[in-house]
Image (tube, rainbow, N blue to C red; front, side, top):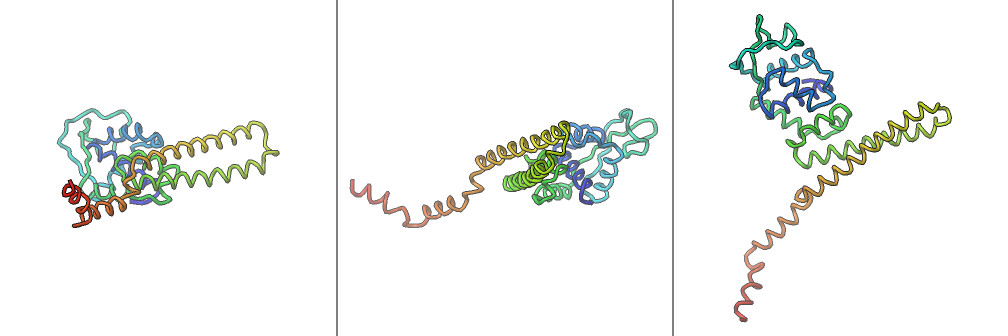
Length: 228
């Protein structure tokens, strides 16, 4: 599927279906609930995405459910529509869809730090490896710190030419970014405290290896009983 907004929607749909199989209307409500940035999504953008995922073999339909009335906003040409009634087609991930989701969840490059995609990645952090989570958080922080530098420089350069209302708007934006940076700092610190194993696997293994080496620790415990 194409990158950009389409790729973000792909991740959101696959991640939601990983939680539980859903029919289209439920899926749209879930996206609107857990992903605030998707409030503007409509059947016009969701169903083309679902059709593409079906064509790619990443999701499958299960039409064995009951029939329900169409929601008022359901389009006449949606995949859920039957004459007068709507079959409750349930969408679920295929094995290929699960693999694709894991592939998307391992992406920690600049595309995962952007305003639109960061929130989607963050919504599915519970399915993301700790190392990738940390990389995304640090990348997002780096991106915002660059933005802060730019805003502060521009503000210092144009402060004298701005009216009081525009100046307050600039300050509001600056404070919003600063709050997010502080929030990211807290998340990063929490991630580092919660996953020390990711930082110290080798020393632990080396210690275990030495302890299990024949003769490495035997003299100590064996000599003491003989002296007693």
